[in-house]
Image (cartoon, rainbow, N blue to C red):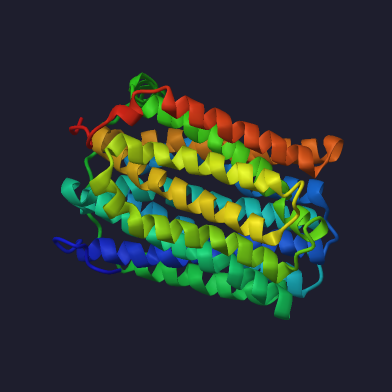
Length: 409
């Protein structure tokens, strides 16, 4: 990772940053390879890829809260290491099933489910660990670097994964994803333990109630949570059918699909690079609102492909999906870290992860049902409606009125 414009970020954070980059790259390559393998090798259609997406995201709904409890009671670093190792093992298992000719759609979905367990635990523990390592004044810069790493992975991972599947088959894509995941493990394992506030020995239900009450009662975090739930539901209604829609309706190849998904990462990268300049020119709350606005604009562009089928329009839509919401990700994560006591940050992150990422399998299942009963075009209309709702929720809240980052809790 590079140095920040002012004081350099701590060396421990840079090691986490590189680990995060490799983990994100691995995840995105595997997520791009899975539906392509399902369509090209297992003859899956839009409904089947929708159920596959649901299986790959269901752990976010089921396991984020238990992961948050662990993150507030045990070593967050060790949780990240073991989680990434679990994901690497799921990739190896998928590869072995593939090369042995035993892979089926249910097995592909099952391995995706296991890998997502590792992703859930990693994603809950990392935001809670960062404030222990990085000073409060540098949180926004640290989160920007994490989003840049995620953006690079979202940009390069699907494009590389799609190209590998098209040129050599899905097995090599899983080999590359496994190697990157293991690199992430090595980087984390070499990082010394950092002190985190000791958790008081209390009942699990008491811990859960405390975290839920704090989140539900916070006038800034509550509308952010609702907006994120609606955004992620609508996003995965679209994601559930996009690969099949792009290949079967827009006439795109596997490489072309990977490129459009990679453009999403390019939009994220440009948005993350522009974040400091934007933050200097607009109030903090307005920067947060730019994310839902970008999602609404992107959904409108994707909806237009019903009447003007075009891979270029699909690419533009994914660019907007990346460029706007990455500003949201940076700003809302910084806000959460600033206003939440560190001792409950794991639980608050877990509730947000459960609600937002947990909305993804619901969106994927909704997309599969709507595609089966009404067609893919109806899915695009449902997704666009969801993106309109999430924009209205955040605009009606106090969040856009924020001039700067609030004081710490």
